[in-house]
Length: 50
Image (cartoon, rainbow, N blue to C red; front, side):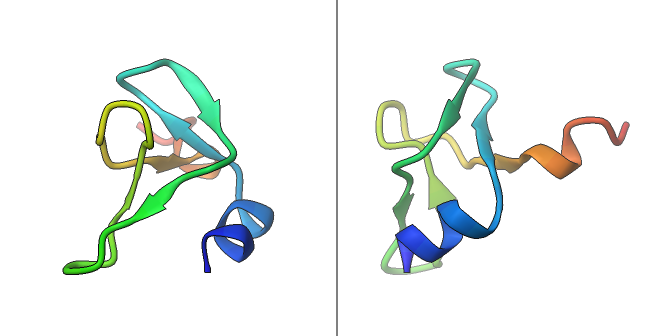
């Protein structure tokens, strides 16, 4: 599932300030999180909204 998530949308970690191409998916809540710091990732589509 993680490959289809990263292929379908570009993800960004606001904590690490970098694009994430290898995210983790939480087994309990299915949140997509950064492999380095554990922060929930944002879609690059959402970065301009604000």
